Image (cartoon, rainbow, N blue to C red; front, side, top):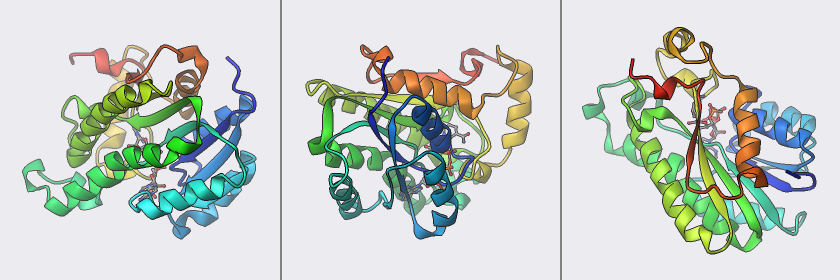
Length: 254
Ligand code: 0WD
């Protein structure tokens, strides 16, 4: 594996608890050039120190619900990098009220927003990246097991993650002829800004400590190390997959 000198664009840094932060640090350790993108001005105070910490070549705002912002991001990046080797999409959003209600009460608006930001954004960032991607580029997105089984309080995000995993398979098929790979990493629950909107996280983590094969919760480092595998040529024959990094909890029936 040689990631040294690879240009990595990471979407979804909100703060130092973000999964994107853990991945950025690990890829920096591997010698990658890091470029960061964040959602909005409100995050800038937390994101700028992180950009400095990981030696980011740039740190640019981009709301992925807007195609023109995605396009503008790539045209800014093209001024500094001649190609992009790796994209990490670590983005999800649903209005908080939509998560903790009975699923049959999911609103049309909440459904559309969740699907747009958590699923369609992956398609949009890949499509707009195509002219800039290197021939053996690798793309990674983050998902959760609530896509496969019902996770109480996860609601519309579970449906969005199921769609995201399916989108990864369809993207893998359409990108394959270009030599580009795309995979999903299904992470066990970890406390971040996004996951704190899901009620019952602490109880779930306690249950995992008791029942998961590894008898513990996962760490940012666990996720980041598997991310290195998926974005590097260690996984050169792997595309369209969902890799569980969850201390094994997904294999358990009870
Ligand atoms: O337990 C967990 N934390 C798990 C998270 C378990 C399994 C998967 N994941 C997934 C999430 O669903 C998400 O896809 O990992 C990804 C990253 O989530 P995270 O690191 O847990 O959460 P966070 O640090 O909040 O980063 C997600 C970020 C947003 O943060 P806020 O909290 O500001 O919504 O996604 C970004 C934003 O930075 N984001 C956007 N970026 C660009 N444009 C947008 C947008 N419109 N909306 C949200």
